[in-house]
Length: 337
View 1: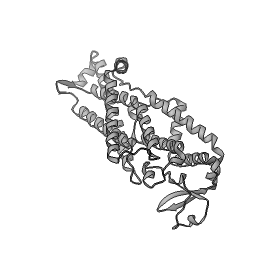
View 2: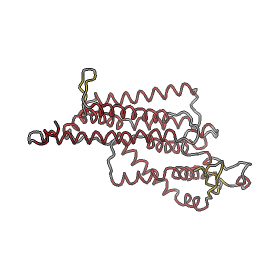
View 3: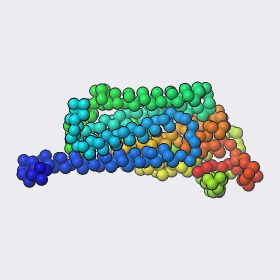
View 4: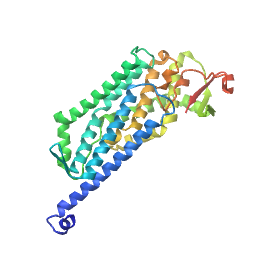
């Protein structure tokens, strides 16, 4: 039937657009497949047990939502044309679901990052006295409220729903998906803050790197660099160590963000909101909370388990372990890479 439509002139337009929509649907399914694989890969790549946090709960919710979207797209793609609860579902709904999720993803960055920052600001110094079970309930409740509010705004707030209708009316066969101005703003802010901090502490960071030695401790790579105690500039020394720890883990992501910001690349919101990006933001927010709280940070083993990728412990204390040779040398600090 498709071949006959393509042969005559009257069906040429229909055939071309059907073929384009099929290719776009296939591409969307592949993109979501790769994103889901990356999400669950990052969730499993935890070098140590992780303390309960709001960002951890939100990362899991993003992975589950991506997985649900992938299953829905695959179901529609395989069965192509069917009725569900009295609604005819076609390949067009692959694009529609992706656009709805993308607009929702674009609405949640600010509230998510604000709640995560407040969570870390209150927990790194243990000023929050809530029991663990109560915190888990609050984190789960906050995540559910954020997603429900995001989908509600996408479907019912006139400004957002009009953007969805405009995307479909401009080019229905191309499935246009917009980026998130909130994520772009966050990227700009992070690049500016990191650049300013590096410029301010460039000399000390460079000195630390040049004098650092790479060692192995408990089968884990560590950096050892000189520690000079000076109470008058303790907070600035802490900033240098936090920069060293953060960039030692996330330097490729920082470079990527600089390229994206400078080139003005528009990344669709449903692609940009992913678990690796959230882990990157998580480390940045933790570093900011540590630097703001400074002396109030409680130096307990449990407190260092919030970040699964960066160890912040030795930003605050000299390395002192009697089982290693480095401990015999006063004035050394270890940073786990």
